[in-house]
Length: 165
Image 1 (cartoon, one colour):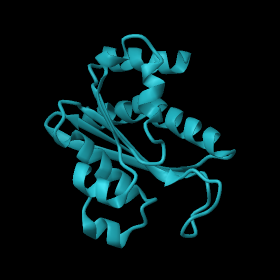
Image 2 (cartoon, rainbow, N blue to C red):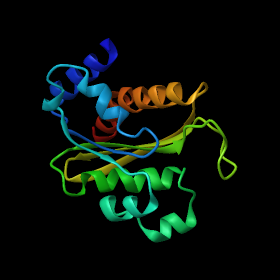
Image 3 (cartoon, rainbow, N blue to C red):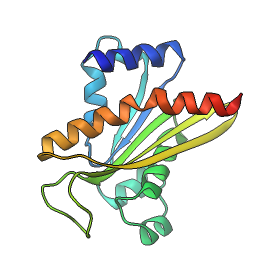
């Protein structure tokens, strides 16, 4: 909880407002934030989108991207993050999509999660993404992936600012 509170302090200090687009983490990113007092100051919206239809309808993920890439892909996560910012005043979005387990799916190992972080900065949109693998049972994978998604925001924001300077 201390790490999440430190993240919230960072978001406040840097004037960052967050939106999320969660598939495999199913709202756990927002739930982790909600455990801390005054998290609402830093959170605009959280989308939970499991199905491809919901990803298309609510976040604007393109059919072409769905046809070209697996649902567990950085390309899908990136479009989800962009979609989370589309109708939001937020200036940072986190997206997750993956296989929490317990079994592999479409040849992708359980615990594989694709992440994207989108930032609105200086009139531009900047995207970062990664794919990680978390070990353990399904609840542990979801918890660790959600924490990872949140705790990487300062890293990517610092990278963004360093590149702008």
